[in-house]
Length: 203
Image (tube, rainbow, N blue to C red; front, top):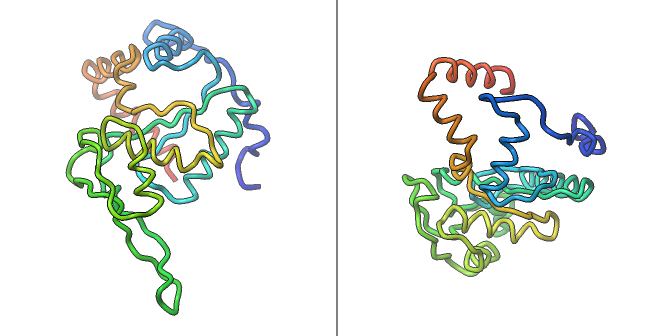
């Protein structure tokens, strides 16, 4: 078994929200967030990652999520970690020039490694390869969304992304604003809750 629970059981795990938070029902928060983010009123499967050309292990998440979204007549959302800071313009590829299997670095675009991707303008692709072409043809007002949409286009043969949303936009929802206010008003419990969650789920 590759997943726990089995991927064949995932569709049955999708259910309507229940409970309350800050005096409002989760269903109400969800409806408000959907409206703000322009998402449809249907089951939503979310997969997130930094805006970069990632390895097949991450692709597998999108492939599985895409299949589940189809099974439940839902939508697949790529939630982009657009505040990511890193060298997304350099990727590791196989080097077939030597006698033994090795890798080399391929520069597809120059990215400032000291500034959040969301705060950088669109990049100018380097060289002539599939990744540079994907960047050149991708939509997006900044480097983060340009990389995310380029990756989405490359994944189309295996995964259909319905919506590509910047993670920082979550703070613009009513729930995002409420959570931010709670952190300002009661920082200590928020810190404790976060650390407890990390300790419980980190492997």
